[in-house]
Length: 179
Image (cartoon, rainbow, N blue to C red; front, side, top):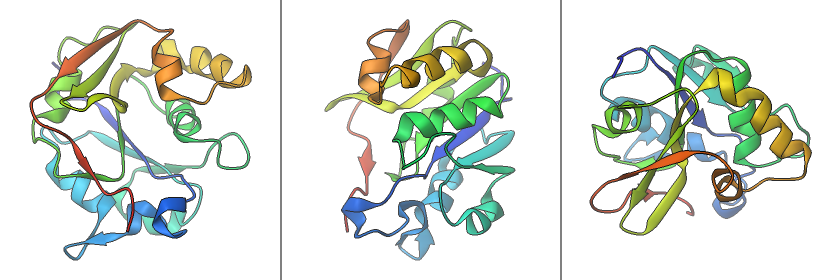
């Protein structure tokens, strides 16, 4: 595994289950969720891209680049992945901003044995975690755009149609999905 990778943090949602709050900026134990996530990754990313449709100036302190969706109306996390793919090269690790205390080796697990035409995705004891994935940016830019152009929005739906490898971890990934 190369220690050179881009991290894409998905923080572009409406925050409906969070009372409209921007989930990545919600504080847990005094720190915004986005900052907590960055502290846990080993190896640390070479570059950080945050997909955010609001509060870009606040997210900039943790990112090399903040990108909004290329599609209107908060089109979902796959639109955030699409935007991140447009500004990335090489290995890309994609994680939702609301992960709480992921395993320190999560990045290493997802990036190990990553091949250009494949997606590595986490499976924990509760099942597939389709937004915790790694892929090479170049071969997926147009394919994901085509999926979204055809009306697809589901991460599971997209994964059902692409070559992917499930990376099984013990336990369950925790997330903060509501207040």
